[in-house]
Image 1: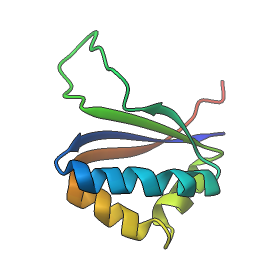
Image 2: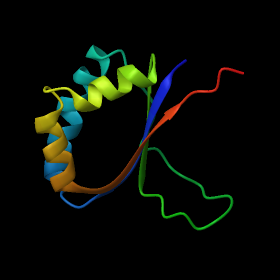
Image 3: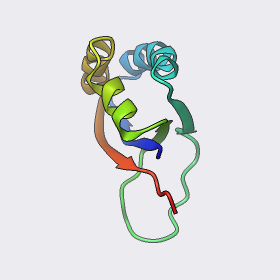
Image 4: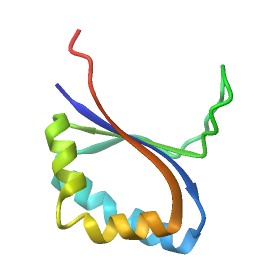
Amino acid sequence: MPGYLIANLEVTDPAGFEEYRQKVSPLIAQFGGRYLVRGGDVKTLEGKLPIHRLVVLEFPSVEAAQRFYDSPEYQPLLKIRLASTKSDLVLVAGYAG
């Protein structure tokens, strides 16, 4: 069952975030992940959740997503992201039906 990393990012340092954005894509692919949503327009239909830049990543499993997040390769990039954004990030299991 796939695992999804869902991030809501408010970019506070565009230059720093651009560095993160360019470096993280190959690493995501290395761990079997792919972008489903990458910061496109968001239209709120209900509620008042403050959505900024929404990103949804799909990995083959929750474990694969966790391995990506915990990997030594991602840690320097995580520091860049945390320094250049205010962010919320969740890991969720896909639905098997």
